[in-house]
Length: 634
Ligand SMILES: Nc1ncnc2c1ncn2[C@@H]1O[C@H](COP(=O)(O)OP(=O)(O)OP(=O)(O)O)[C@@H](O)[C@H]1O
Ligand SMILES: [Mg+2]
Image (cartoon, rainbow, N blue to C red; front, top):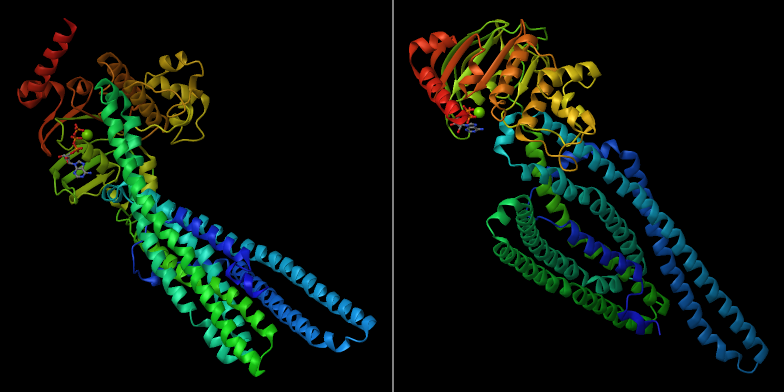
């Protein structure tokens, strides 16, 4: 009997859908921080507007698909009523056997017809459900793409200080996990939200038009269902956060174990590492089991409440049928309606919890998007520079640590000069280099290039005339060729060879079977420290810069190679400015002028000979390093 089947879902698709949805939510459910301002999501409205076409069609298709769900419920009512009519009429024709057969066939045919119609409706609904997904989920994917690009563009625009304040993991999380949470809102939440609103409005109005009292009774348990799901979902979200944390701890641990495998093995710590992994793994298991238990509560609760709704409908409906206010078909119709409502009502709890999670993520994303770049150009001057650099009483303090890395620096470097900046570790040399590239701005004082304040230059124009070789060499996982021509994509083959010759790299490259096409990084070969530094120098030389800044980038090459590179530089940087930063006196020998930095201050300056004659810090360094070099040779 129909009623007998009520404890099993009459619409398995709904339940399967929900189940899939539920599982999907687990996969994507990474981080939930309760109550958040849903206003943060308003930022996304501009995207809804951009894709208004898809959204409008999505709404239209949702309405149609809901209608095609409601019509079958009415067909079931007609089928039921005709069956009960037949039960009444059939015995009246007891004496006319032939006519009884005809009546039977007629009824059987009409029931079959209803059946076929219901199947057709279901098929049509299926087509429209497909269209709903094709519009709304597709829209969410488009917005996800746009949002990721917007965030990445902003990332590229933000200054170095921003990257100091935020760790890489956090930046990555915003562009991946947070965007994913937001996408869940843009896609499934909007889709199910719409379907919930539309089904609820349409179905409840149909129900009310049939019988108000029966509607009220059968809907009674549904708010409890919605609240229950919201509650369970919040627990699940919290638990998922814990699982996610545990997982990320485990991942970092494994990552570190892999990257530090050399140290790990040489210190014979494999067993210890295994023990630690087991602990992480155990934690993950415990958290997952807790989640499994909460999850197990979900279905029984849902089925219980639906069952309760059904019983109420049959009971109250039964009384009404006896009173003659409604037909038996109406009860069947109502039961289907309740089934149709179960999903939207359950989704309500899910939707609100997902929307909150998305709001939290969007809030974090907004924080980044609203972050302003403080390194800006005041007058946007784009001009070719000669390379004269003047520092007037420049001081710099790192805002985050409060360390005063440079104090009252005065310096004058004429165009075409080669200048060496020497100093012990932590004396502020890299800070100085960063300021010339305008990665940071001076806290006090002024830097001028060709007598124009550095802040007046257009950033791109200024930076494109600099050749900066940073202290911590960074090469991309790409071919040597692409690494060298990174700053000048149109570099010709001759220029490429010339740059690598000037960086004293050509000899090494010729040894590689694939030459310039040798791949570096994860999938390629690992260069030695000195080779990496030279690729990095070749990359800067290839730009043909007006000012070259080498930040301690000869530390890993021997003094002979250093000499060759510096001599080459002298030739190619003729009439251009070179700044060689080093803690090695040998790098300074060829310089026209030497500045000695100590603890953020210039303690000496002059030519090599002048400084030797001064008999100060430079002379001391010179003697010490000369001595150790001699010791190394002997
Ligand atoms: N991003 C940063 N945030 C805060 N403090 C920093 C930062 N970078 C450097 N410092 C501090 O500023 C001071 C100068 O550092 P800097 O890197 O300029 O020294 P350096 O002369 O290049 O040293 P080395 O020869 O070791 O490269 C140091 O005390 C350092 O701890
Ligand atoms: Mg440094």
